Image 1 (cartoon, rainbow, N blue to C red):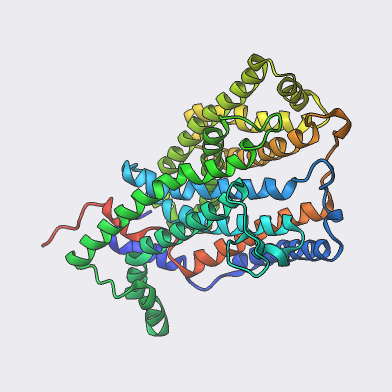
Image 2 (image 1 turned 90 degrees about the vertical axis):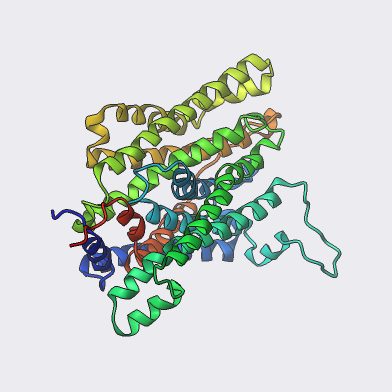
Amino acid sequence: MDQLTYGNINDRVVSSMEPPGRSWMVSMVLILGALSMGLFAWAVQIRHGLEYSGINHPIAWGVYITNFVFWIGIGHAGTLISAVLYLVRAPFRNSIYRASEAMTVFAVMTAGMFPLIHLGRVWFAYWLLPYPNQRELWVNFKSPLLWDVFAISTYMSVSIAFFVLGMIPDLAAVRDESKGIKRFLYGIPALWFRGTNHQWLHYMRGYLLFAAIATPLVFSVHSIVSWDFAMSSLPGWHSTIFAPYFVAGAIFSGCAMVLTIMIPLRVAFPGFKEIIKVKDLEGMAKMIIFTSLIVTYAYVVEFFIAYYSGAQYERAMFWFRPFGEMNPYFWLMVACNCIVPLTLFVKRIRTNIPALFIIALLVNVGMWLERFVIVGTSLAHGFAPFAWGSYQIEWAEIWITIGSFGFFFMWFFIFVKVTPSIAIAEMKEKLKPPLRR
């Protein structure tokens, strides 16, 4: 590979935006097929009701709320990498933060669908919004479910603004490399950015301000999502550890998803191998180790609190999780989230690209199962034994879940071909400036 220069960074990123080839087309057909099946399953569910899902008494939440929390968690890594790691000047963020920011926006878009899907009667979704009406109905501001509406809409708007702001210099670079109508189209979102000292000064100040604003959102939004559970009185849910526990889990799963999308991106475009370096992926692997240890600690503390509290309902719940009828999900969760990431302590493994990809996939599986275990077990075994129940995942839920991945990857595939998936300006900052002759 040639040594990176200002010019060939532009060339490699712009070449990735060329018209899609056969492999992109085949992948998109598969993605749209998954999305279509998800839409079909949702249409059947709307036509016949939630009887086509596994939701039943007493389990009023299920796969859909699991997916909601999972996708919100995925969206946290992008903001963490682009904002928090920017403030601490982490060296491995430059090559991966643009794609992770896009991942944040698309993941939050995907998560936003699941409260509507879970609602069943989706045409009543506007009842979630506080607005004056003739029926004198008002939303319950004491409900953490309403807090979600405000937290996630705020997070979504700030993430989009941060994402678009960061792309301005790169869109200007693509504009200057393009001709004809493409030059005009990329010039519009580039906002006449010419790279003058005055423009760079204001741009860097604005970007720093947005990074400072977005940083608290990393910790606040998923804390509010955790309060959906912690504010209830159910055994296994009513716990003060949920906020830090959910935040660590969100960053954990989000970092794994970053590896899941960046490794194939690196393979699909050979010119990216010198940009997305192994040491950058190794930096994400180290973050996975760190957050995995926090999540493991939270698992242990949960069981200790249940034992030490002396509350018989809590003890029964945390006995049911590893030894009840849903125990396969629990033990697979422990294996994926607590044991598999420990292999990353070995440098040979965390610098091995195929091994990193497999570990990232397993972490994503484990974190989905974690949310499913939390949702299902507490609702299945509440306070009254006569009201206990069980949960069986139905075909509509499976296809809607697969369709959500199709929705997410559809937007990501479009993003890769329409906008720069690598931060051109920040990659150039890492290079030594060319010498004048």
